[in-house]
Image (cartoon, rainbow over all chains, first blue to last red; front, side, top):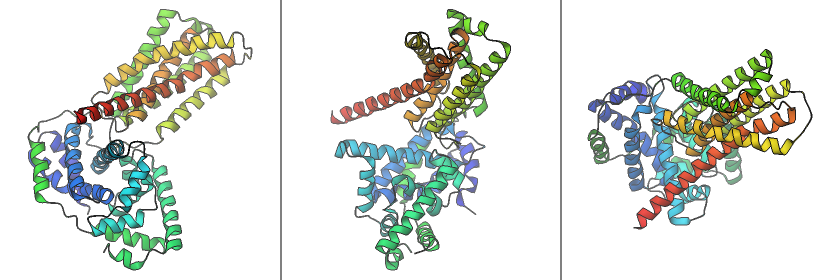
Length: 188
Length: 240
């Protein structure tokens, strides 16, 4: 059973002002969101900051969650917005006119604090940002196609297409460069 | 390496424990609890979309009432039924799209760009089916007047729509601006169909329909400009 099975109930209680539900939600969802940030940033301090920022935003817009809708994509949609916003600010602050794609490539090749995050990044590095986040959510976080579509503000068809292209690109890259088995061992 | 091997690597990454300090979690929880109080969830999508369609209808009728219902009076029953039912249906689709833009985690059937394209093409098809007068008298001069009239009437719809959905949260302000502009553009087309007595096919197809994409593009541009200004303000406040 997925740990988010009662997220919807907790969200409803959180909207009603239940402090216990809020604390449980923070405990349950934060690890996933933290991994979502650290895989891209490779820096624990930045991931902590983004996690805090995400929760403040979640708290501010908690009324936009609907009890009948899945909660996890709602969390990820906001986390993704925070992450994109962070990239955008980084671009403006440090590199002026360089585009977001270049920044995410930098993040992919930068020395990572965690070996596992670095291994995953090495595997996903050849993919464009939009395909990478879809693969992360679908395969690493275990979300369904519909949940990923909700989290990324796109259609299910678009998500399927991105996954298909991502796997094609991964196969091509791996057969061309040879992703060593021992590299993948770093993930285990 | 096969797909299964790639899956295997990703699954092992998923099983890896996430090391998150208890202190971080406690800090997040404390910051939330400080201002924790009950909130009123947003109404259902159909209520908000219905409100937006009503705004469109009200602005269209008010605009045409000021200028005169010349186009509506010139149409026969079949034309009236087809044009206005199509406009209401398209406004509903655009309104649902706008509601989705303002609620995180909504499931979209079409991207905002595809939505704008579909709405424009559908409108073109309906108008092309009804208007068969292929003369082009005063094509540019009359056309620009209609385009400007439609765009002017789209502005209050966009503003009222933002007011109506002000409790929402747009993850992407540019696409939200695009869809809001499209909704306003449909209200502008409504004004033109009620008022404009020029039934020449080229005039209606080019200048009336153009209100929708132009208004959508203007909405996206305004949203981009607002976001750009906000980021400039943030940068200057950081420098200070």
